[in-house]
Length: 525
Image (cartoon, rainbow, N blue to C red; front, side, top):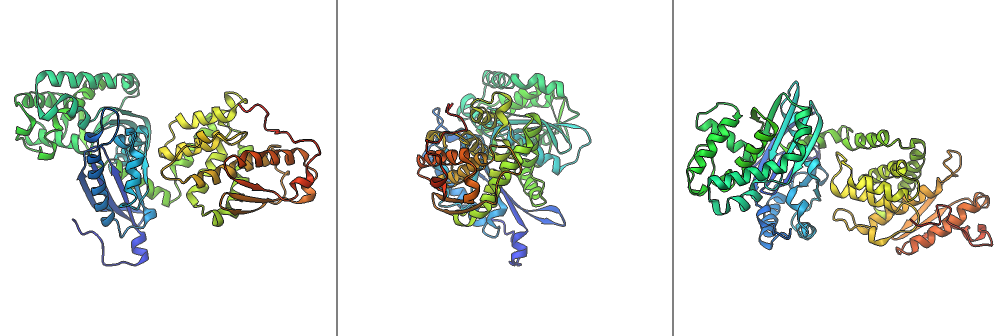
């Protein structure tokens, strides 16, 4: 193992370290860097072949053997990452853990050997990270197409500078295609034809949009495209780039062999032999369908994109803030009301964060949920929580991993009226008590700001215990708010059904003699 740590073990030195880990379908990658004078300096790279996708059954279940391979590598990575502060490590999981029905089981087992949270990201988010890695690594004046062939999926992006314009992820990868089209390394012209045809069919939905957008340069990243580039240069066909004629020549060269394990070609490592035919078929399909004339290789990919985004967050340039602002503009969200609800939610959060052990990240997620909770109003004011949740769950939200996106959608889905426990999703990164805590804060913030007025609320004071919140409101003020008192009493009943106690002194004294009604709407849906 490469020794990369310096002899300086002070907190200042350690705090400068950052690491990105990519749990891919074929290999696990790790990159360690530090910030020097505002720029990233790469210190160490590590790659371990795991082939998770090979262990994904037809029923989309990871086999025990595949899990054990992954856990063994994570244990090694954990040892290497010891000098890096936990908060400076970001771990991203892609296609296979995105698709596997039992990925949560693997992630729970990983916690025993790997003390860093794993974020499972969407295909579009994966494509965005890949594009950012390329854009930061190598400047280009013009529009650029980026392609990355992974073990289980292939990502495409078009962008200018640091701004991605189009992002796509297609379910075709060198491991999955190798298993299906080239089992045990067997090669034939017919197998190639079938693999290329399936890849072309997979690409068909994005072709017109990508061709219409256009680009001036095409680049490829990661191991498969690098291997093909190295083979072409090693054979003396071109010193720098990949062209379709080279790919077709390479295909004919491979077909002349009966099995890929027998291949002895420059640039082709032993661990790539079983994957080279499938990777080549996917690349040929992309050249054919997208009309690519030349492709250059760039030695940067998803993990570099993750590192650069981590660096941006250190300088308070969080892509997630830009995403939320885009939603506000696109869906014409009432920002005055959003500001009121967010302000109340964060005020309560600040008073309860110690007793409920809440973190800055949770404050951000609560803030964003409070900002967009009415995003579905443009569809219909009736059941706005359902419409809002649907948008947030299914929209492309750059910067958010799948669990963050799911958590915000879950909070918004239950921000008013009855709480359906079956819709409080199970999370890997967030405990159930954390989800409930954030939900209670959002619900109270919405309830207390129903009048949509800046001058309505008195000073709020709150105290917390596990599964309990005491909300202190002035008695004389409550005596003037009969409708709010009724709503708070109704909220106590809603929260009781999820085993949460909302205590509000003076509530009974200030209530009307007749039973209170829920002003947020009697119709639950």
